[in-house]
Structure formats: structure tokens, C-alpha cells
Image (cartoon, rainbow over all chains, first blue to last red; front, side):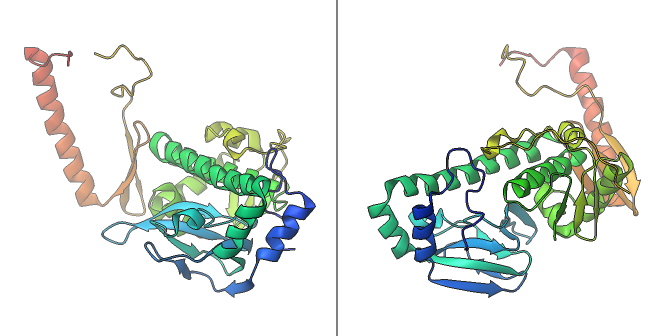
Length: 247
Length: 68
């Protein structure tokens, strides 16, 4: 099933079996794509949307000098460019961050769902609204938080999203992002990110090593990053985790 | 002046600069998080000092009204 993680643990938006079957039936193709491949260019006409099955993808905007700001990071279960269905073109680029497996859903198939399944369309709309909520949180992060706070906030958000997707136990998860990715997410230089990760490690808030993130005390990291998971609209918001020992 | 305490106010806390890998990192105030080369950091420091002198003069002659 390609849709196992789509809307998983989202408040009031869980897919009914027939709805899941409808989306599965709408998938025209499964593609495996190499890391760092741009799959959507800004302004390019779109005829399908992309459901991320495995791996990590990102949305980004480059400035005039080519310096990149990531505008979103997507994890398995995200319908990455669902908003491209009504918009037909995007104003930003979409790239694979790691190697990925994606399910392609042609817009003509979404048109059919639109005609036949208003409740399912409401859930697809819900998915794009969560994307918008995440964007607002990213604005807050970049506008109001210091460097450590920005990284702490992002790692808390990622932990919560991956818990919902069944890919984190709340303390430990795989995150195949580079230091440069973190810099482009948090609006920092590589040197600054390096400093921040060292500080988080020394403060025993987080260890990020060999693509594994370990968060001994998620509550303390959330306080440092001013993170509140309400904007993720989770059915079961991450419970307050007891601190654990991280070697 | 807008009587709204939630408006972003001029910071009374200083930024903190530190060195890392031959570069200068400026943290704060208010979410500032930049990395500068030594040359850029020196120019910033000089610009800050010059602007600070002007601001002090403005406060002395009370020439700037706080009202819009």
C-alpha cells in the first residue's frame, strides 16, 4: 500500500478503507528517483501530483546568487505537490533530498475523485492546509528564534511528524539530511549549524550523528525551540516523553 | 507611539559575537543569526559604532519625536 502513511494520525482526517482504495487506484505509476533530482520546476505545467512513499523531498527557492532557502521538507506519507492540482503550476521547485520512491497520481484521476468523493476531497484539502500550517511555523521559526532555537524547533517538528508516520519512537529517528540541508532549512551557514549541533550535544538536548537523531528529553528540546505541535493537527500529539540516557 | 506591548520593540539586549573556524558569528538580538568574514565583521563593528554615536547625539538634542 502506497498510502499507508498518508494522513496517518491526523486529527479527524484518517482515511476510510474505501477512500484509501480510491487513492491507491488513482496511482498511475511508482517511480524510484535518485537523490538531489529536481522533479518540479517553478512555472512548469503540472499534470500529476506526487505522493512520497519512501525517502525525503524538499521544496525550495533560490535567491539571485543561487543561495537556497528550503521552504518545506517532506517525509513518507506526504502528498508533496497536491496543491499543484488546483494551481497547475508551482512558484517553487521540488527536489528529492534522498533517493525516493513516489506514487504518481495524475490530475485527471484527482478530477474523478473530486467529482465522486467530496469527503475524500475534504481530506486532501486538509492535507494541504497542514502544509500551510507548517509554513506558518517555519515563518515563526525564521523570524523569531535564535540559531539554536531554529534547529531545536525543526528537530522537534520532524520528530513529531515522524512519530505520526510511524518512523520515530519519540526519542530516536533516522534523518538523512546533511549539515547543508539543515543550514538551508534554518537560514544559517554551515559553520553556524556545526556550532549549534555542538551546543545541542553539550546541553544534552540532541545528538545528530551518522543520520541518526537522538533526543534524550523531547520536552526540554521543545522548550528550547518554543515548539508546540498544535499546528500539526495530530490525533495523538506526541506524549511527553520521559528522558532517556543517550550514550 | 502605538500603545501595543506586543509590537517588536528595540532590543535592550546586546548581540553576542563569537569566533568559529576563522569566521565571526553574531547571535541576537531578536533572532539575528549571521556568520561573517573577518572583514565583514570589522566593517559591521565600525558601522555599529558610527551609528551608535549618531543615535546618542540624536537623544542628546532630543530632535527625534517618538510620535509618528
